[in-house]
Length: 404
Ligand SMILES: [Zn+2]
Image (cartoon, rainbow, N blue to C red; front, side, top):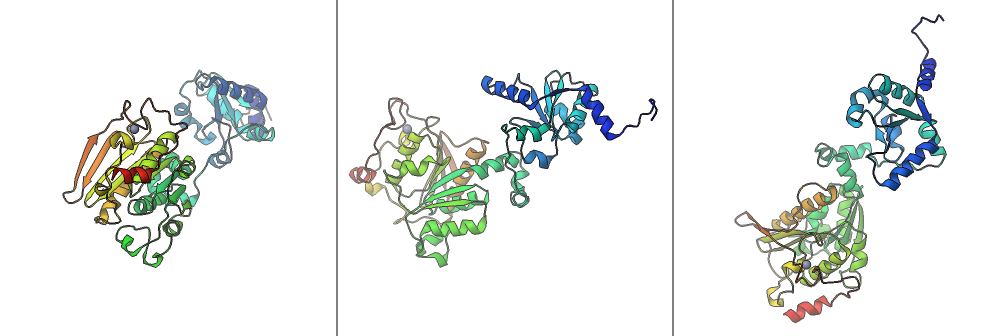
């Protein structure tokens, strides 16, 4: 082959590329990662650039690496790494593709300082260094959640948050039924359901997660069956019990968001006090007749239930839905608003209903929003002077009975 020829074999090309870029041993790259971690800031640290294909990246990559497949280098690198003076350490599975990418970046795209990690991800992993395996959606999940993936506020990232989220529903009744159904459909990965009741024929006018064949079955079991048939991604944890002072902390501790569909005051107060102590957000709704109300209690960011209602009402003014009428669709509307708030909290988008109390009147179809504030001075639970750490929970049944 004459020296003038411009045709080279792929191997030669790679060899030349490797001779024109700095190579770093994975141990040196590991050191820069450790420094980045101890400084807590990624701004000054070198950019780790993974130039492998999508399927390789999904099987594991260096922590904090930016992914730009080599085939998309020219079109995507300027967005991914806008600062051309920043140090970049590129890697692939060995070092061939990363060497070619590094040469392109240095010699054609104007990046000052691009090095390559010797041995690539293969050697990195063989050395036992840490790597991240991104959770990826299966092809079936991409179809199931395709309408979520099409809205940027959710997208793959939001859908993964939903799949990782744990939501505890207090009650599988009028509010809990629609909330659980839609949260399950949305792909919330873990749904805990607390309810000690059984399905009754009078429930079916509104508690749509149950059906005629399940009359007499525990509600948590009926709900589990419906959700299993709707979405196999959801892990249902049934708790056939009533929330009480002994179990409340253990029940709520593992969950990210609590959906309060309780139909009685003792449970509401108990849940509130425990949730403030554990700093768990509670999406609250209640209904009666044609009226519903909704708010989100995020401890110390907004009011808690007791900031609004310091003491339970007298028993004769505190009806439960067991004995009183309710328009069947009303808990459906309010339960879905709860599901909406829950999803927003999980994906971190939108404006949660914190410090706002939404009232809905079904006959006139009117929504009214009231501003509500945390009572930092006077609240017996989330007030500044209250130390909840060792508080024993009150006997709420007695509290409510006494109030009557
Ligand atoms: Zn409070």
